[in-house]
Amino acid sequence: MSALIDRLFPWLGDLLELGGPILGLILIIAFIMWWLLFERLNYLLREYPRELTEAKASWEARGDHRSWYAEQFRTELAGRLASHLTKHFSLIGTLIKICPLLGLLGTVVGMLEVFDALAATGSNNPRSMAAGVSKATVSTLAGMVVAIVGLLAATLSERRAMAIRESLPAHFPQTEGPRRA
Image 1: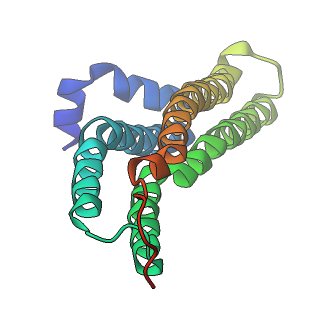
Image 2: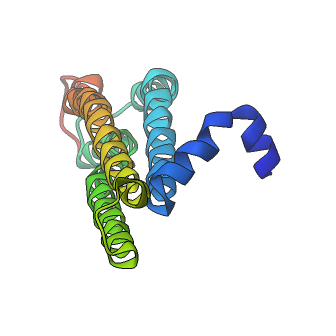
């Protein structure tokens, strides 16, 4: 498996060595976050229109639109669609918040390596400190970049989902006529 990864992404091994294990964790979280964001985008663009069409057809096929039972059915249709629209956004938000914290943890781990190098050599030799400094800066940079780009993408997609959610009741209008219980 690692030979396949090295062949597809030859720079990844060097980057992980430079940034340390914290960088690997940040990259895994970034992959999961983007997987969920692409799933949300796919839902908004492909699956939601199909589900909305099915729900509208179900509502229109119902003869009664004014009774208490009709209102419960309408609420259930809109609630199910609203639930599907907002799925995974809290998890995506949590992953975005974790990335800068992991970058900070990488900074601390890298600085501990710098201090270990200083203690081992007894001097401030830049070569002995370089590995720790690179772990500190690369993991911090990765955590911030993943968080900023993820926050932008998540905010845009969540706003779109919330705008669609607010317009849901208009898709299931009540018709005029005698109110039945």
